[in-house]
Length: 288
Image 1 (cartoon, one colour):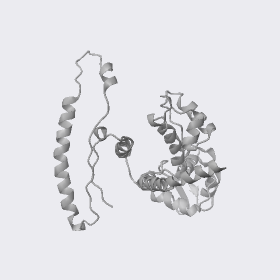
Image 2: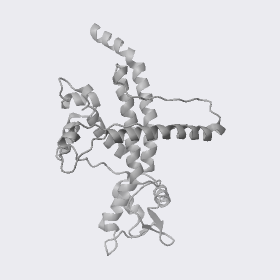
Image 3: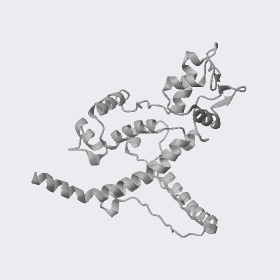
Image 4: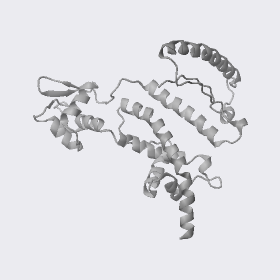
């Protein structure tokens, strides 16, 4: 009992560190959640993706034991996921050499549109989504809601689907689907992919520097900012950064191009590719 008490007391010293880590996570998640809401990704989908991300995270060298990645039991301890969930996901992901992505549960609007598009009860004779009565009719929007177990007011869902352009009013009291996808705000594939890459690169740089005690191997990452910049000076500041950074990026790009190994026609490039690493340099402006 005495040893347990000592363990609890000594463990309390790390409470402040854990709280600080949770605050940092909340700060990182706010813009990420903004991105997800813009693209119609709800918490159920995000939670499923997060589980997969936890499993990828524990594969980092820092969590290995004797050079081996954590087994199921240790992974459960590190991530809080059940051993059953971990085993299931590992089996699924190993089908395609780790590249298979587990399908995620859809958000409520996406499930609603999918049921409307594929359930025969809500299709016209030609197999396309039928117009639905609202609030009554046969078929009706209320009947569609019943198939997906929605617990939200029908009016709120209709308003959102109409606002984002997935549904339009067809006549005085009927709804027609014009787009099966649900995306609350306009976006495109290129910027979605770029967002993920930019955030990942910056986070990996900061994480790598936190893990390394040797300043010689730390990656360059610096910021310059003030809490009291007059709003009227923003445009001048943007122009200053753009001019300075553009020159720097052009020089860095020229150096990277010169360092890129040249492969002659007919030459086997596999040996070079195995020795190459992805590396780069990025600059960004921020403001609250």
